[in-house]
Image 1 (tube, rainbow, N blue to C red):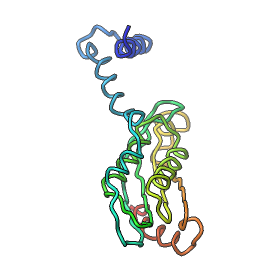
Image 2 (spheres, rainbow, N blue to C red):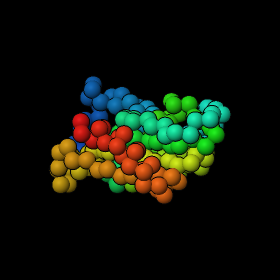
Image 3 (cartoon, one colour):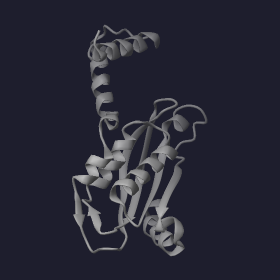
Image 4 (cartoon, rainbow, N blue to C red):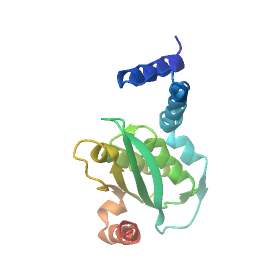
Amino acid sequence: MNKELEFENSIKNILEYIGEDTQREGLLDTPKRVRKAFDFMCSGYNQCPKEIIQKALFTSTNDEMVVVKDIEFYSFCEHHMLPIIGKAHVAYIPNGKVVGLSKIPRVVDVFARRLQIQEQMTEQICDALNEHLKPKGVAVIVDARHMCMEMRGVEKICSTTITSSLRGLFKSDKKTKDEFLSIVSASFQK
């Protein structure tokens, strides 16, 4: 049996387990739709941040902070496979090269479109940019809601989790770190 059919049969089994009639009209194509949704929502496993970054590196004399704020993302927690919905704020200080601005959200998506814990995803984004862009510093803050906390368990609606990861000047230079925090702080007051 091929992997696609195995996945669809697993979804059918889940539907039967929860008490659904898999032959009713609204559910006939659900296993296939769920498989296609997971193919997209977990597409980060098939993407390489190095390739994304290296496709759009440009020489530049700019040595000031570059910040891309409010990058929306959707992920799944690896513990319950429930959604994580949030925003990432990413900054770097160029070191002779800049990356095309659209590549930063693409790197966020590479790691968001995998089963995740937020703490690890934040580190992965920061490390990928640091390793492949080789800037003077990288900073990443992720602010997200976790449906495993809202839909089940403690059921705390609208609570958010904030994680950060800092490299280079963002970690060693307080002024640089404070500038970044000042720039992104407006996002947290919304």
